[in-house]
Amino acid sequence: MRIGLITPDPGHPLLAAAGALLTAPGAGHRVEVLDPATAQAPADPADVYLLKARTPRALALARAMEAGGVPVVNSAAATGRCQDRTAMAQDALRAGLPFAPTRTYASGGDLARGLAGSQPPGPVVVKSRHSRKGDVVVRLEGEAEIGEFADSAAYEPFVVQDFVANPGWDHKLWAIGPQVFAALRRSELAPAAPGGGPVPLAELPPGWPALVRRVGEVFGLDVYGVDVIDTGGGRPLIVDVNAFPGVRNQPGAPEALAALALRAARG
View 1 (spheres, rainbow, N blue to C red):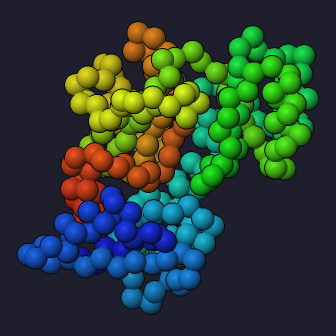
View 2 (view 1 turned 60 degrees about the vertical axis):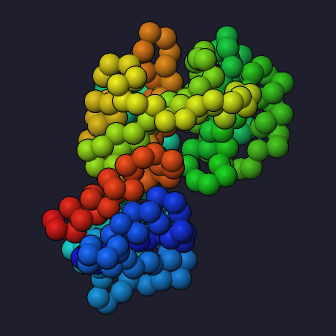
């Protein structure tokens, strides 16, 4: 089988490890890389492509492959949908997922005006509406902080979620095909602290692995991440969904990705 990667970074640990498994002696497979910044749709495409990029050129390249009947994991449509946090929240809440209620503002100034006089009693989390590398994720509290943010923010749309009290740790849950992986990471909104790392599925609250798989069904994803906060007593609150995240330092993840690529290539 020929496995294609749509990525500017084929040396990413997950991709490199999965590629090594696919091309190992006796495996009999080839891995081919398309850098979306420069590549065109090849006349002789691979049997499947793994879409580990989210730029407009990467999505266009993936759509060209799909139009030619080549499977792409994840699809261009699913990948693009997860970049819009407003659409993400709408899809999740419509499906009954425990997703954080999300409000959308056209700019930082609109955000400040929208929250003025009607601020929730606690802080809020502000994020860029469009998920990308280096996007905005910040906790703000009070009119002064919100005003300072609005004055300095780039002109782009933002979403707002009410901050939910939590221990300061995020559960990072990932799925690669049917397999679910988990880790505990210090929240980027909380002070840095030692600890965290992989979490055995048996130590997750009941129902969380099934929730992760349900997210994949709702969003049409095969490789994805779900950021979950434990709001108390094992009650989950989803705050973000990511298409094809890094899934770093998770034993078994490269094997799961290699197996998924071969299943997709075989139809």
